[in-house]
Length: 524
Image 1 (tube, rainbow, N blue to C red):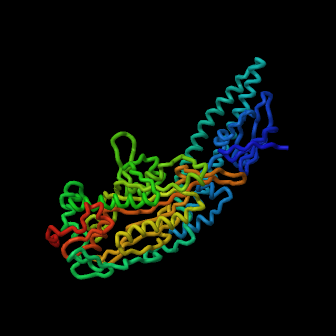
Image 2 (tube, one colour):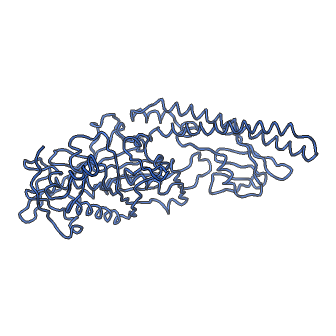
Image 3 (cartoon, rainbow, N blue to C red):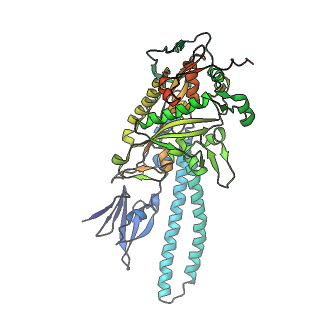
């Protein structure tokens, strides 16, 4: 009869009587040598090829088990009882390579075979070492066995390098497969098919300050100015000198432009704090090894600025989501009911190359290389992540409702999702001069895509469960302040200036109106 000792840090049990060890669906049979040490061999040796020794009196089973079980998240899901067709179908929805799935499976098989060969070599070396020990005890000549062991040692070095190369290739290829697209995502490769979920318009779109009346912001009216013209007329920025100093799309915020931007930052952080978010001001750059775990490979060339100088390769962040996602890297929330969810209000300056932007999006400060952003980032259990997704987009909606900005929420089609997102909603606000909606918010549930790479785990694996359990990571813009500022300027302008939205006035020294102080810029 077995008496099992369960180790809470790893899905393993060891029998106190005979030494049998069970790890999830793996059972290790054992025998004892003359020194009382248990020799354990994986019953699934054809797959894992694991052979090791365990001190029968040791209770530190978890340390041993962590050395024998290898997990590569995507490839394991594909190859060990997973559903490759589910991932193929997800790739089809994204318009991404379906063949990539089969390439990963093939690479996994190659890595597994090389790992088995390495384990076989180790078994032979261990057996030779025992025979050498016996001969030395009896003072027999062991030189031939020593030579065989040395030859095997050279072969082990070669195969070890091969295993590492195959492992690296596998991980790199697996990392290019996108997250599983959620069933509710509209399937299309054309963003014109984004699904409108809901719209909001202020019940009182007209606001007045003295003789100053805000335009009806639901209509396009003659005399309206674009946001960059309004910002220029209140002396809120200097683009010409900004371009001279910083290059294309460089700018200086000045006077009321600075105040409005800081007001949005302060209001945004206060808005989230009242909803039990912890404020984080993040680093502006990240080490490459962590950026690679949270950003897609193509972002390195198309979006990210590289920082050099101290010998350690770093990248400027494109969003505070990136450093916050790594904030708990390699951590394990063993009591998720008590420890999760964790809600962060991230604040940072962000840096993006914005390659390919053109037309009206490049006017003023709407799409620039440097901007400030307040971000929602949440870590939670898999069971609650979709509830949190709904809450996060609702918080962003409440923020823009408080600013009196008309908007709509759209579900992004499968072909426009980034690799990490299983589902994404955008909040697009109304720009009356341009007579169109423009994106101000992106809200994504990345499920366990980021946490697997960053090894952020939760709970304890129960007997019979095959997979580790990872937290789910969600992110949502609250306010990219320069872009939101553009929307405020178009929606709250009057004939003579800009009415300050009521919720921002306490952050603007109590002022409620910003008059035009400069003539409209000359048309080029």
